[in-house]
Length: 442
Image 1: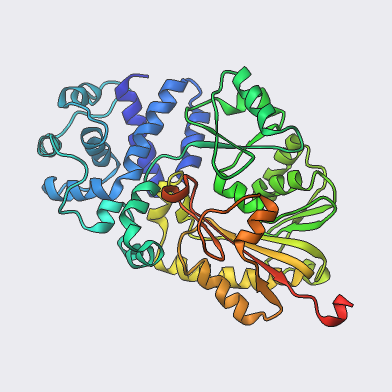
Image 2: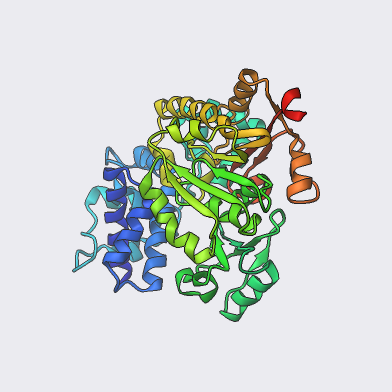
């Protein structure tokens, strides 16, 4: 593909992402499946153009509004502005790419030429930008993010706007980290170990993961280091009864099976049968034979009542705003609304209320989100503990020492991870234990 064809494809995909309000990675992946002639360099260039816009959309819109003489901030204008401000293209390069030839964008209009002339020589950031524009997030989230990060808000948001590396989790059912690293090196992939998870290998380059033998054999699985830590802090052990209550496509179910060494009983629940079905191939590839999949009609399905007080560990990876994953999903921020946050908080509370029934006396409930907001994290757990005197919060340092070893990041009673502070996605984990009554203890 020519550079112009790559730009045209990116503009078309940006418009589709905006119109359908669907996840960008799904839309881009579907495009590449339909256009198999696009080579790896084409895919990298198209994805690079798209994410240059999605990561800096608020700043690009600010410049278009300021210098565009009334031009709308659509996919084409954002792309042109990003090529100038973020990717460093010259006017000549943009003209050659946008010549109207087959598969290339139409030539620039007079207004677009004027816009790019006004933008030339500027940096994408400007001192006059308000905080939400500089941080590239919806304005309504400003007070929530300041509550979460305080004086570090600007730096934390800059980190959340960065590009995430590829993290791989080593499957204990298939081998250890040293063996996985050697296998990847044999296939020409350089990795580095990370600071926190003993199972994590980080890749800094784009790799054809699905073609690698160590992936096809189940030795490694894609999982951010923060997500790996959340699963490790469940401290699921061989022989236990464990439920992954919001399992989705099974990423943490796979991790839990590895920690249990395929011994015990592991149940993956979700209200979406389709998501659970997608876990089937992953479970088979990983060799996770103890996982049972249960599709629930809702989080208050009768299955929960029938299995009350039955599990040693109940893992709740709750639906959330997903702010901690903005490095990977920058388009998601623009789909969030205040109503979404309110609905998610209510849903999280309802899920916790239902899931706690599954915990046996002496068992643990692990609450995790990939959000950074206090409203979804610390405050959610505080409300839960106030309503359930039979549960006690376990200090994360104690859980970390038992499950991971060593000293955890931070000093709070609950775990909070961020890209800036820990080089992971944003994650939150709290662990509570159900007290046994005197009769049960006897």
